[in-house]
Length: 213
Image: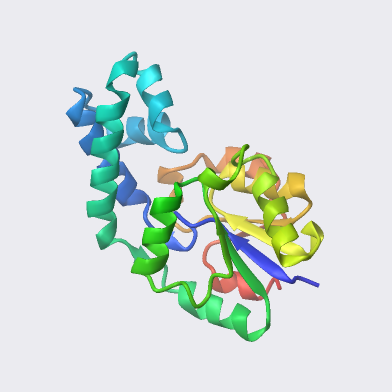
């Protein structure tokens, strides 16, 4: 019996990925780098700011890059929207008495901002950011923290996310894993590589999740 659903945020609950590309462009421009969208996705997605600057050979510009990136995120993400199935799905889970957690690679300030922006507090029982774990995705630490908080077993949970690290985290923890892969996500991820992580299910939208619980 599923007692909790653990959601990734960006690209799963909210259609934010296009805005991340724009934010990275602004920050990269600040330190003198001009990449294509494809290069931004490859070099920056899922990578911490100091590592990006190290890879670019400009570690001394980490502070400038990070400040510009955070400012751009705060401005651009105001235009982001939840996926159309997000709120109906969360309502359905609440009505069934299923706990809801958000597990994100993002910072605490960001996920708090997004929960407030989209009025998700009534639905989200727990959120865990990268700031609250020693080992972020794909390590299972965040899922184990969530199951401890809810007093349930990992096998009583579903982890749903759009990246390979979400799936690997879920599988390592012992959760059921669902890959969220809407139409057009080939722009962000190599689908053949995602499938190698062997998710238990693959869905194109959150409405499909309901049938799997």
